[in-house]
Length: 421
Image (cartoon, rainbow, N blue to C red; front, top):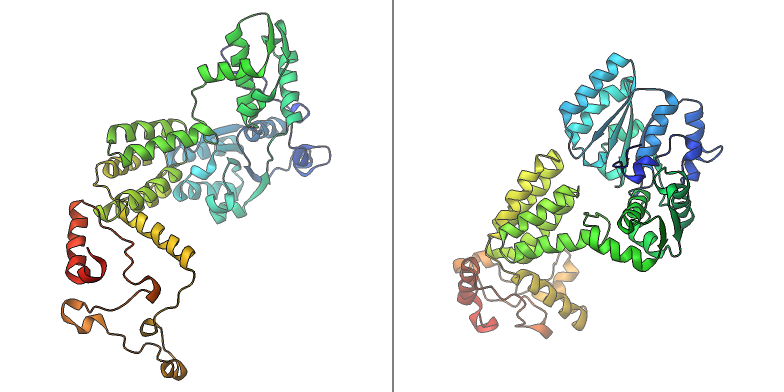
């Protein structure tokens, strides 16, 4: 076997008896094993964290059923690719189509699968790390059986390492002793693929025939060599933090770089768009109200379009937000107001601001002395809108950008005496 093939791929199980983990599905007498043995497989959605065997199980099913097997990645495939596979499946009579990260398929892409699934031309096996109830369209979900795959436990992962040392033709030539395993298990985060490839990285880096693996050795090599984007790990948060801070700091070049890192790492485009939507309000706010509009449209667009085209929309929005004037005044205002609520408690609503739908409420002076702003010049009348105990408390302080200077002038003309704008 080619040494260039990663260890996780070289050790990929070919049968259920070789498969490690997911005993609740493929253990003796369990539901999925029974269906495979009877060769009665419905369309399936495997839902679970990365590296727990979703792709492997799909391949085992294909082998056991002796059916043509096609695979697509939702990150890089579109409706055209789906239709091509369906045409090939028709010629073969029937086939299995495995779609990795099916939650990234937009509605149009998922709709393109329906007819072939319904007619039995393809048996769909989708893999997702996201809740399929939210990410897979109802018609497709109703035609599929969802199986939840669990994180691998310590015993499962150690069994894989033991198998790797005994069965891999390259590793079994070496004398490898695992003195400590905490770092291997921690850095892999329960992901079998990551564990095996990290293990191989350590062995290859040491480069000796006799190797004693310790936590210190693993940590040192991992810090030097692993630069992958981990959607579930620390780097995931570091890179999104760098992305947000670059836009907040008005650097479009850095923002686009960190965006590219996330795209290359397969980050969920909706996660990226969601964070930009937050930034548009938190860090730009009324300095440029259009930022929120564009960010919201971006969020909706990436949900409809998906990868790879949505990278353009993400880039456009990131550049726009980075080059927009900045203000966190609205963010500070709500934080100050929340602090006041926690400190002062539930202060009573002034009587003149209360609703008065009943006769009793009117008798209690609910709504009395309220002055309707539109009855006055410039649609304004000076009135108390805060509870008496916090009267004249200023939560919102406009920024020094052009748009909020206009807001400051507006407020100064009306509330100069009360709020000192």
